Length: 264
Image (cartoon, rainbow, N blue to C red; front, side, top):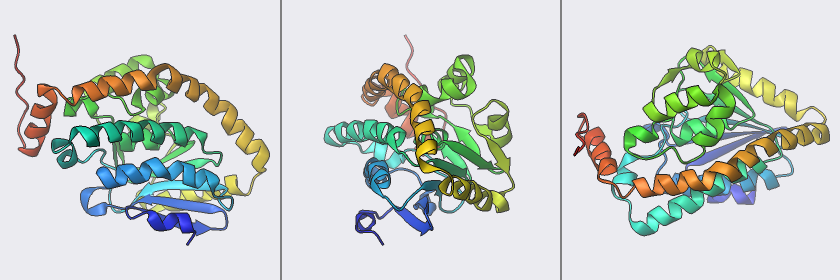
């Protein structure tokens, strides 16, 4: 194992002749993102970018989910220091992912929710199993969609649809996501990894300078969108963490009830 990989506990790596499979590995929690995993995600893309042996990446989740997004137990007990660190890391995750020169193929094997959806959709080529679902559920937790969803959803499915899905948190099936342009391909669950890895192998075996230049040129468009919106959306999301509505959403979810908001 490369020395840099030894610091990871909740993300695993498998190398095969230039194709690196990166797996979110907290399957008992549907790969929900807690403080440790979020920190590891903030290291991930810079480490991958520097790995000279890696020519393509497959991104997936262990078990039955890609990633269920933020761990609500973590949110409920968030200190101000942890909140400040979260948003420094959040920006780094998105910016660094766009700077990775190697092509990233996501294999969405189950629920991709919140940050999980963002990471799946910011990959370069997106495969989803028929069992997959995609949703940006920030608003359902009483927080703004600030971790990159406002960057990528409008580019993939258009502004009108992005507003609808980000403001409602509606869950989409893999087929629905495909039909509106969020994912490239939907495949049978038992063929997902084989199919995604085959594409990654094709990319890894192709002309690297030309391919990386093409990706960099296309991602320049997304970097401009990041410069335009990410800091604002992160700041507005952070503001929501201090709201009564956010606390009520978290309590209601954990208590399995409908949130009750105070109205004037």
